[in-house]
Amino acid sequence: MELNQIPDLNLIPDDGCINEHSNQFSNLNIDSRDCMIPNSSSMHVPLGSNTEAQNNRHIKRRKVLTNEERIAVYRVLLQNVVHGRLKRGVISIKTRNCGRKRVQLDTTLVQQIPLAKKTTLRSMATALKTSKSALHRLFKIEVLRRHSNTIRPLLKEENKIARLKFCFKMLESASLTHDPTFKGMYNVVHIDEKWFYMTKKIEKYYLLPDEKEPYRTCKSKNFIPKVMFLVAMARPRFDEQRNEIFSGKIGVFPFITREPAKRSSANRPAGTLETKPITSVRKKEMRSFLIHKVLPAIKEKWPRGALDGLIFIQQDNARTHVDIDDPEFCQAATEDGFDIRLTYQPPNSPDLNVLDLGFFAAIQSLQQKERARNVDDLVSIVVKSFEDFPSDISDRIFLTLQTCMIEIMKKKGSNKYKIPHIMKQMLLREGRLPTTMTCDLALVEEVKEYLNSLTSPGVNSTDANSVRVNSADVNSAGSNSVDVNSAGSNLAGSNLAEAGGVRLREDGHNAKIKILNLCIGSQTKLFDEIQTQNNIRNESSSESGVELLVGLKISLKVCVSKYTSGVEFSVQFHSSNCLI
Image (cartoon, rainbow, N blue to C red; front, side, top):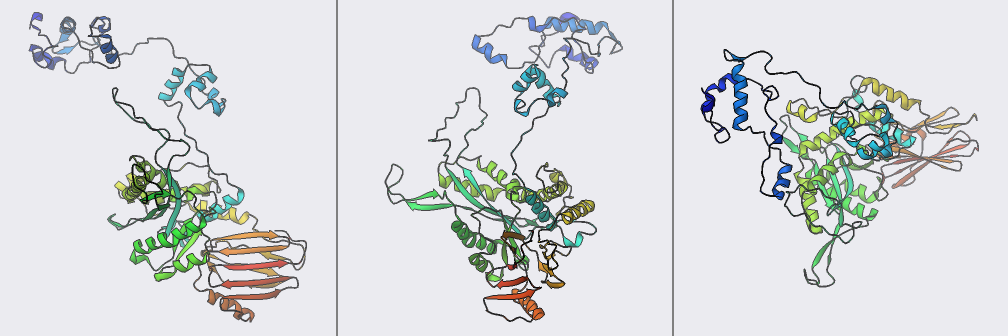
């Protein structure tokens, strides 16, 4: 083929007689520097106007060769072809050193910079006396990494101990000796409150170059309309084929009220019912929502095959929350054959509640994808987001909760840990996703020894008639017991299963221990056992009091009430040398 027969390939990119020899050069990587091709960047391409030039400046175009440049490439290749192949060395594959040397940055200097100067690349470059582009290159090659830091709750030593005991109590008691495994948590309903806002102060959108930017207004950025919701969530249940049996979604309940409009406006006449948020939620409102909304929803949606056991409602330690021995709640929770009880999670521990751990963030991200114009729209959007949330993701959050408990035990109750990722979605696809997490036996033994090494709260004295009151700790059988020893005398109460916690109060020389949320079968049976052992008479049918003389200086009183689910031990010390 003659060179003058090469067609204009810019006009006919796929046809022409050059395709006859395309099979000879299809596997070649051509370096234009070996072919002495002129630089196309030096060629002037006329544009229609300055505006068109500015618009095309940011468009990355493919390099197109002219006919003369194509002929030059063809001549070089034609001269070096032997039996359809290029000679060795025609096309260089070696990299060549070009440009100035890279300035090496001592990464040890980065650790010496204060954190306040490491928030942006610009401030960090100023502190290191280098350019921002140099730090950006280090960020691209992953020498530097971006980290988002959040403030975590301050934990005292008693908070850490309570977190450890809570995590330890969530282990199956039968598996502690060989293969510690967490409970399924299928009988726990997590509740919490959250504010949902009508909009955010700062929104990020992706727009076209000529698209109009949105204009948002508000009377005050500090008072954006918001509504508080009470969310109740349990763990979903699936069969062996991962078909959903129970979604675990008890309900989402907005704190709103409907009031008639006092004045007429352009939108509605006077007397029209308006939806207004309840901005101040007190214990009275919380009790009403629990009794009239949460409890009926649990009784309606709970699986009928799982009504033989206890159902716990886990809440945090907010002041507005209902006490676990509230008479009105306890009466409503035991109706219709249910046994529902309140329990507290450890103080300052939002990472031990699935709602704060991940559910609220997921619901809020779904809610922010819709635009709400008023309170009614916001309520409907939040409810729809709650119902549309996938149940399998909710189940994974419970597994994440168990992995967080393992990290808490590793850190001795601290919250300074990273949430572990075990690739749950991949395990679910492969059919290897566990329903409960397994804990290391050595870690469990270490936590048990650590808790036993701590000084238990009690009274110590050098007097011969000294008294030691041991707080209820979870033993291997998952039960609690209280022992009072004095001068050889011993009063051991019955094992009280699943005690919710122990509170101590020092008032002068009086020490008070109250065991809350006792899950005992019958309080009358417990009192009868104490009465039989000590030959004591009942004083009242509603509340029975017992006074027992232990030693010479100690008086013990056991009170059992039919309205509360707690047993109170009051020990009064007449001695002055008592240590709590």
